[in-house]
Length: 150
Image (spheres, rainbow, N blue to C red):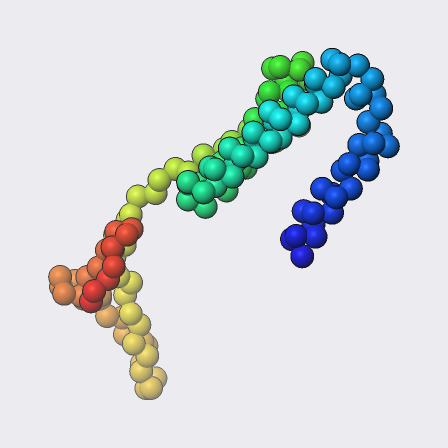
């Protein structure tokens, strides 16, 4: 199914270009702009994007790809002179803050073991026992990349 989704627009592009591309071919400067748009942002951009996907972890690629609309909006404001409404700036701030939370390293906290409640079958109240504090009973902390052998 993904092949159909990707190949159908590619198959229709030449026909759509011939039907609607008369202004693009009306002068050399228009043709040069069209060629530039096809080569630099599209072709080279996708080549570099594919190279990056092959050389970084999937989690990093996903996180960085979430910044693409933010970068596009900021570049539209700075380069093209677009006017971004306040809601758009709020969306940019929200995306950046969420990505900051996602990428901030977390500390490994060693949490104490919870007390266990022992239920009795008599009418007495359940008794609470303290957790075992001996070094043998402490949970092992495994660092990322280590394999547990015990």
